Length: 110
Length: 113
Image 1 (tube, rainbow over the protein chains, first blue to last red):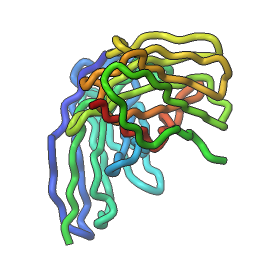
Image 2 (cartoon, chains in turn cyan, brown; image 1 turned 30 degrees about the vertical axis):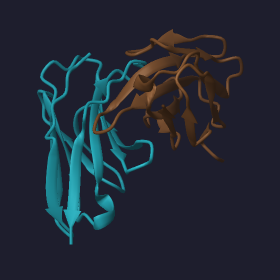
Image 3 (tube, helix red, strand yellow; image 1 turned 45 degrees about the vertical axis):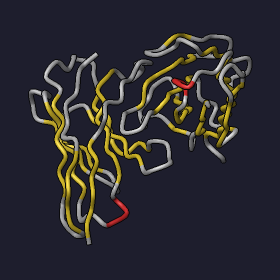
């Protein structure tokens, strides 16, 4: 299983773009990168998933460089409601032993 | 379409008591999972199932048993609860090809006194 490293916490202000980087130096050829968001007292929620280059959906963008040893989750124009813990996971599309680390606690301030 | 439903939402147990947590999904997902989350930590996989009638151990299986008699239900049992099992338990499900990640339930907060 590829180990991931991400910052423990980040602060931002409303309206700013937030970039959270995850390092995964030993990512395998068949591994995908998946990000989840978790609000207090709720289960994690899938945000975005990618394999290489750039993926964008209505919530976020995921940037993956050519060597795939890291990835960056980009949240455009955050609001107070984006305050949450963000998890980066790496594994194959049908891996049944996905490990959630401690995640990055993002605090958005007014 | 309810997604993943967990019951109960809260429970207090005395040490040594037993209980069963129920997870139900209505998305026809093949795979189901049980995780626990302790304060300030990420989720740790307890057990999982890749289909009806199958179960497998995850990262922290000791003290728990599971059953998947029906495709839509995944039960987590605590035979003899211990204070160390005080945690928030999350159930999740996914299709075989996890193109959109897991779908999680809202959790069960269990306290063992």
